[in-house]
Amino acid sequence: MHHIHHSEAFVLGSRPKGEDSKILILYTRELGLIYAHAQGIRKISSKLRFVLQDFARVQVDLVRGKEIWRLTTASPIASHKEISRSPKAERIVAHIASLLIRLVTGEEANEEVFRAITRAYDLLASSNDTTDYRVIELLSVARILVALGYISRDVLGVEEEGTHEAPKAFADIAYQHRLIRDINQALSASQL
Image (cartoon, rainbow, N blue to C red; front, side, top):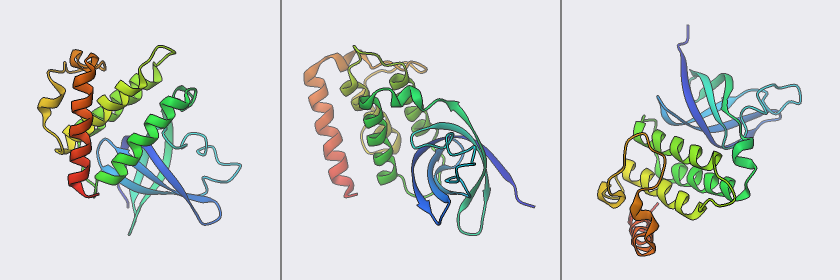
C-alpha cells in the first residue's frame, strides 16, 4: 500500500506528457520542489485541468511512484484568477517560478522558501492599479535568495514575521539599486 502525502503546493509550471497527461512542477510545503505526473488532466472531461493551471495555489495528494510522484487529487486554495487578472502580476509569478526551477535542486522542504512564495502570491493577489510591481518582485526574489542562502539576510533589514509588506528601506531607490546589484551578483556567482 502506498502512503498518500497531503501538501499545500504552488504549480510552478507544467509540460504535456503523452496524449492526455501532464508533468507538473510543484513547490510543496512538505517536499520542496517535485515533479508530479497528472494522469488524464488534459482531457476535456477532467475536473482537475482547471484546478492545476500554471501558477495556481493548491492542496494536493501525492503518491510516490518508482521514478516520479503521481498526483491523485487536488483542490484550489486560491483562485488563479486573482493573479491572472493582471498581466504584470502573472509575469512576476512566472519570473519567481522560473527562478525556483533554476535554483532549487532535489526534493527538500524549505519552509522559508515556501513562506516567501506565499507572501509574494498574497501581495500580488491583493494588488491594484497603484501597486508597485517592481518592489513586489524585488522583495520576493530577495526573500527567496535569502532563504536559499544566496544572499545575506541583512539585505532585507528588519522584517516583521507575518507581514507581507516591504520593509521601509524598499522605499529608497538607492537601496533598491544596491539590492538589485546584490541579487545579480548572487545569480551570476551561482552559475546556474
